[in-house]
Length: 132
Image (tube, rainbow, N blue to C red; front, side, top):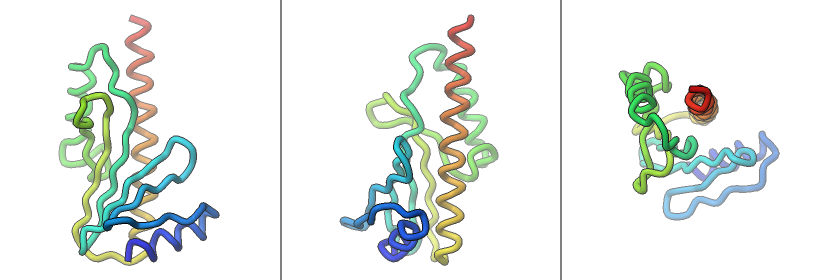
């Protein structure tokens, strides 16, 4: 099912084909927006790096991110976390249920919008910290 959905999205967005390998695919919408999609059978999960983790004032940033994660209110039910090496902030979303192509596409679109939003917010946070 994942291969069918990705093939359809690639046609709609005029992107090169994406191949599913071991129930997972690395999907690039545009330069700098990479989303890993995994087939959960049923459902899907989405994962992406938001940006490198800022080195300064991490405590303040983490507090803001924890508030955003609370009940998924500012993340669209996604979760902001860190990569295993603690170098990147990440965004992930698990949807363990069957869905139509339309829901899959809308969910991917929402996920990417939240990814872009949090990249911008972390950028603002870093710019504000440089001014202080």
